[in-house]
Image (cartoon, rainbow over all chains, first blue to last red; front, side):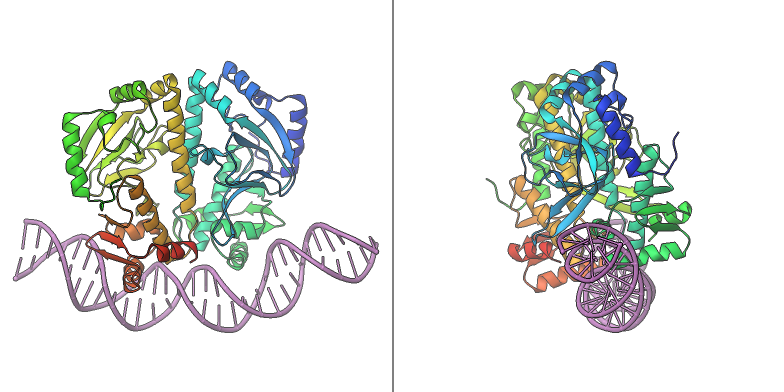
Length: 248
Length: 248
DNA sequence: CGGCTGTTTGATGAGTGTCAACGAATGTGG
DNA sequence: CCACATTCGTTGACACTCATCAAACAGCCG
């Protein structure tokens, strides 16, 4: 298993190369953690027919906006995306960050409108899956249907768990641990990864002030728990981080 | 449309009566907001075959526990339930409250174990839906499949939205508004309803101290925004409440 | 009545948001 | 390649919200 630190540049190039030679999920580097996970050959083939394979986006481009008619799911192929809503005073609130292999748009199903705006944080790539086609395929392939339920169930669960933490250090630690876990699931080192998210966005997501986040990062650095510079994170003391996330 | 205040006692009796005479969703008072919503006769009949109709529980009884093997979804039929997890130090953390008509257990799908413990806050009733049977039925009935996706999508969405609020007053206001909306969807008055949730549980769910909650309730009472006594809530100034939830 | 549990009240301090200012990094146009 | 503008991150001072501790009170049930 690959445990090299995750580098977005690398992945982006890799993905672009793959996208040129194959638009099939079975050849995608992400297929074990993405929607195709657990499907057999026949199901994969059908999925490949439906999916519009990887297209690239630049920093700041959106996949869809809150309120747009819902007609497709999207899968992050490279880069990091954020989903956001606007509060009544027009301020953006970040709901979630999305890493490669994660499916976005699921919350748009229930009333046929996207409920969030999804934006690329850096240059990235995505696949698009028309939802009508996917439903139809799920009707024919029980395992695909089940995988979709699993996917939504997992999203629901991880969303519920975010609800927990109280203090700022705990929230930050839990956030880093969540990222670490997700990178590990993707075959990258959970101890060290690129994190092309501005501190403003991070603070927004975590529901704390930029200044608080900055001070916290410095503190964790001074305590020898982690190193963070230039959007690159290295976790030095995983136990301490877990303790922080556990207590408060 | 019925806009009488919601009384759990009433509903409980009603539901018990219904449960004795019919175990079919089509005769259930909740069928418009529950899983059967939008299904045709054939689909309803099939669903009725699968569902184990309403059973009663007493205060403190659990439907399932975190870690139990997942094999069925549950629908609240009467009463209020809470779903909880335990943090590392063994303290209970309330993830969500569930009103009649709401489906619980969805987060257990993805790894075949329930992810929360669901407990009755007062005497109540529930229906049980074996998940394997439900999946099979969804395979035959596209509309049922779609309804399941809608249900999970809606849950996901409402979970995401909880993520937002910051200050204690805003969180409390948002919580009351969420309850009001859910009671209105069930045909009850959104302005006045029973709320058989202890302040301890409420504070736990909202992530604030009991004392803070108590002081807040008093403040809102003094400001003429609401009346709260004996677990009965009356909203007097809905606009003010919405303003509170919006800003902070 | 006494022993619970649930709720209220007050005093206090830690944790964080806010404001203001500065410094560092990045991007832009000449 | 250099000035400049702009965004991004850091630092300090301060105020305020809210958690915590302690204690009294209220409601409920044996």
